[in-house]
Length: 354
Image (cartoon, rainbow, N blue to C red; front, side, top):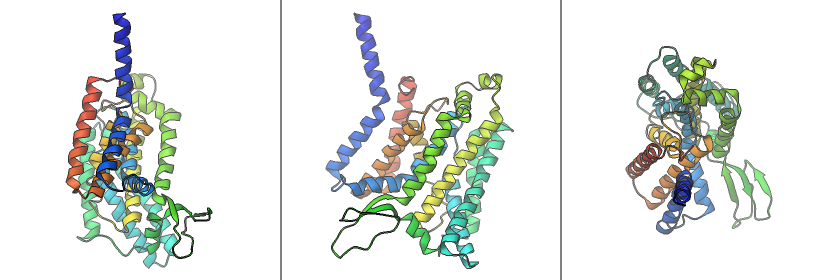
């Protein structure tokens, strides 16, 4: 009888442990609904997704590195993101001055930035996989390199004069619903004065989640994804089983850099500028999203969808505090506390998030 009660209690604790993030999200929603007037609305949901896009992206890329284990962590993502904002903004302006159309300038700038943004990941991966440089050292060095290059490109002032179309894309919506019930995609329809048009899902959110869904499939449904989990679980066993650990680690850091670059493009399109420090405050958010989502810092476990829940915790928090009018540093404090709590849960109850 006592054994059965003990097992039931253990199962209950494990069930609570696995779902603590969902419980925390509910607590956040209830708190801000009471404390922040107008929080419970469709507009607020879209704001949470809009402002949280970069955290969703950075968290997804960071997840691949953390799952690979070996103390893997990418400290460079915040400034790789900033680097991407600067490069994309400069390139869009350059292509526009060369006579390209606004759409061509934006598309060429984004495409070229995606390719350039892979370079930091290639260097990080090569240092970690081939030269066995500790991930902390390799990625921290890349943090400084990308930050320095960004500042050199800017020469002390933010990039500006981008094509207006960039802002229209970044601040536009995937669909618009008219009072008559008809849908208009990408462009806001003309309606009579006094009639309200409902905007549905920001473009940036749609684009971000397309990439996230693709790489969620890669991580959870492909051989490469299984290799990443195997390497994080036991690197020596992975080597003995014939997995090319060096090649897989190189890919992991490239993916992390890719998502940081996409986050940078998202920022450029939303704010129509490039800033070297655009992602400096988001490194903690990206790592916190992964850990809050249940991935172990020792590697071998974690999922994209749980990391998105972790990012949602942060996005709700930041949006709620913004509505309350509190300063940014308040978010840093609260996120830090939540991160410590998540690590403690992982250490005390390692099976809760498995």
